[in-house]
Image 1 (cartoon, protein in one colour):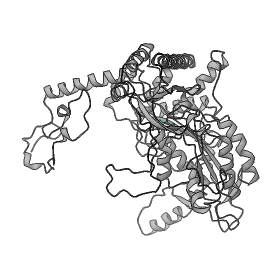
Image 2: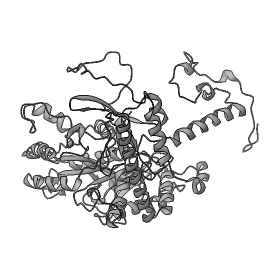
Image 3: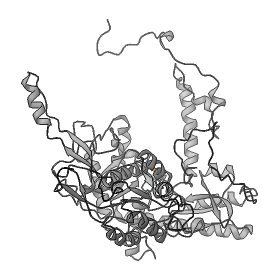
Image 4: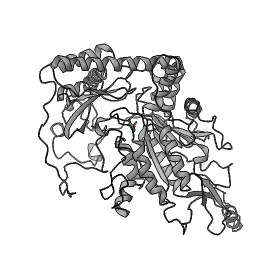
Length: 581
Ligand SMILES: *Cc1c(COP(=O)(O)O)cnc(C)c1O
């Protein structure tokens, strides 16, 4: 027998591995990537020799270096340095499983840093802090393992259950059960047990627990995905099914699929508040609770929904129909047992903007910039949740983010403010503890002053890029559809050819403008972008053939919904392309 605790090599018998062989050569099956020979990366049962590893790793390094240095297409920063402080933790498994405010027994965690990061953003977003389970106005939140997608999922989940009259109740029978079981000689622990309950349907309002979702046509596809996952319905679905003739924006016409954005495709991309109010009022009048997802920095145009103006326009509507504060009964037998809840939930998808715009506001207050964005944070008493992606404005080597709400909006037993719900308050089980450390390291090194300098830098670069594109337009004597939404870091223009798209990782979107189908590219001017990089792009865009030719003719439309029997690609959600390509 081999010695315990001493590593020993065995002779490996390859017959011991029951594995499947390939059906064809994967190297010629998968997409080709410029600069990468897939063959160098294919793995085998024997692993790769040190020489093979080094060939592959140097190809990886060249590839990532070149791509990173030309990166312009997405709202993701490529400029940060975590290596010095955090490199060593690539060899640690640091897991923040469970609630950030409870230590738990998984002690290799960074929750003490997570709490510092959450406090920082609570303060920046004007929430009441620190988090205190007995102070229900104080914030609650956590650092996400995914980016904003997880924050949107969580916001929809939290909002849906809050509006649908779901409750968590303490199960009072646990203790007695344990006592009785123990009489038979079996020791029995007393675990806290929560029951997930649904408030009873009200006779006077059958819609009281059916939330209806509203979001603009510039909304990120993660919201559409989250709607499916959470099985929530939006106004288009409910409107079309139950009130097909009653679209309040155009009676008798089909319902719009999403809330219109101001000025349509050619506009800045923020939500049309008048249209939102009309749509919301229709459902509020029928007693439906209202879920609105606002965008604070849309993915393509970088537009900011005016959350304050929208909230102020919607509140009187909620008041009128008893949706501002309403009683939600949780004991069908006992009418004295109820909780007071809002009949609406405002979620702010602030992937880029919630991290960025607070510093624009500071720059504005210091007279360094001539405009600022609309209010979106917890200064507005009607905001329920905010989410943000860490890898976008501040920059991080992996997707991460923050979800934040108020303690009073968490689902918890109504009788028992002491009870912080279950310890399992977050979306995932295991949570990546590295992200909290990245956030912390960045915030420790970048004061408000530094971040203000950064936003001024990026705003200047955005103006520079815009002017260079306009100059190019002049030089080529051609309309390049150059457009820039104020205070956004995004500039859109006519789609460039595939080589340029690849070189700069340009994201694309198709828009109809005045009846014409247009394919756009866009760039995001993040902190890593230099004037030299913009000049290089302009140089490439000045070459003949830089812009791919686009169909001038009106395309034929499919107007019927059809079933594809042989889909070439597997699609899980009826997504809309926005920001995906
Ligand atoms: C990027 C983005 C998301 C999704 O964030 P991930 O970090 O990619 O999960 C959601 N909403 C908006 C507006 C975004 O720009």
